[in-house]
Length: 261
Image 1 (spheres, rainbow, N blue to C red):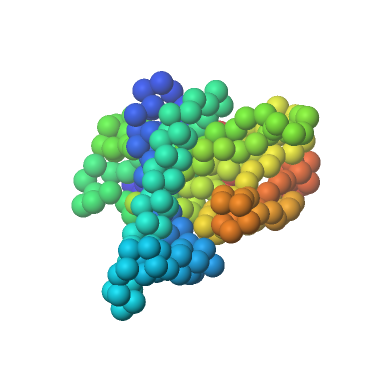
Image 2: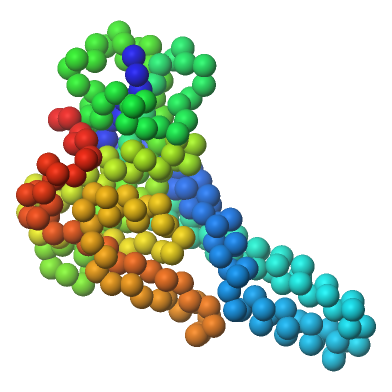
C-alpha cells in the first residue's frame, strides 16, 4: 500500500513533535539566508570597518588586517544562525488555537522512511482520519509521523479575514505536496466559516513556499522591505492574499488534489 496523508486538527500529544518540526523547518533556511547576507552591501562595509579599526587603533600590519574577512564572515554566520534559532524557538513555543497537522502513514516494511514525497508516491490525502477503504488491519501494518503543520488566526488589519502562520514541513520529505494539502485545508475551513479572504507573508528566502501559494491561487498584494538595521540591512517581504469566493469558483482549474472527507 502506498503512503497516504491525513490532515487533522492538532492534539495536545502532538506538541513535542510539532516543536521539533517547526525548529527543523526554520533552521533549514539558515544557510540560504547566510549566503544571501554575504552578498549584501553591509558585508563589505563591515570588512572595511574592521580592517580600518585593526590598522588604525591596534597597529596591526596592513597585510595582517586581511583577517577581517573571515572574522566578518563568522560574525554574519553566528548572527544569522542566532536570529533563526530565536525565531524557531519563539514560533515553536507560541500557542495556536487553530492548528492542523499533516500525518504521514507509510508501510512498516518499507526499507526506509519516505523521502521527497510527490503526488505519485502519495496514494491519497484524507481529512481528519483515514477513509473507510483503509482497513484496520492495514493501519496496523503502517507507521505514522507528523511531517507538516499550519496555523490560522484572525487577521489583525482586516475584518472577517484569516491569516496563515506557523507553516512548517519536514525537510526530509520535501515541500510539495504536503504544503499544498495543508494550505488547501486552511482555505476549506475559512470558506466553511464564511471568511472572505486569507492572507500570509513570506520572506525573500521562502521562494519555494511562495511558489506553492501562487500555484494554489494566491496573489501578491504588495512587496515591501522590513528594516533590520536601519537602511543598511533590509529583508524583502511579500504579502500574499486570496479571495475565497474567487478561489471556490476557480478551484477546479487548479491542479491540487482536494483532501477526501
